[in-house]
Length: 114
Ligand code: AMP
Ligand code: ZN
Image (cartoon, rainbow, N blue to C red):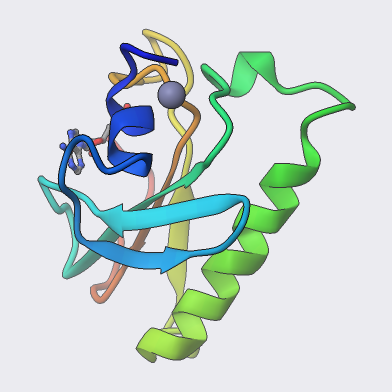
């Protein structure tokens, strides 16, 4: 999508600090980290939000979770734990219209979130 911030990050038009990449997924440091480790994991294909997931395109979500597990092991926080967050729509706090998953770690994350 031409006017999508995360599509522009994926194709390099907007700079990012890459943490992980494969054929289907791109992951980069969040610009406003809420934990010592805070990255954004996105599908390379533009999907606007969780509302747009279907039986046909949702395999990417499992792929994103397996990428998260790999990153957690590689970065050394698998044992202490981590959190994935997906904000969907206005009330869910979504501010960028490209499906994305926050991966947070490196501190004792509180529950419930705000
Ligand atoms: P959300 O509120 O769930 O839509 O999350 C959007 C996230 O994208 C926020 O945590 C922002 O800090 C992050 N973000 C926005 N612009 C950039 C950028 N240019 N590079 C990295 N992260 C960004
Ligand atoms: Zn996009």
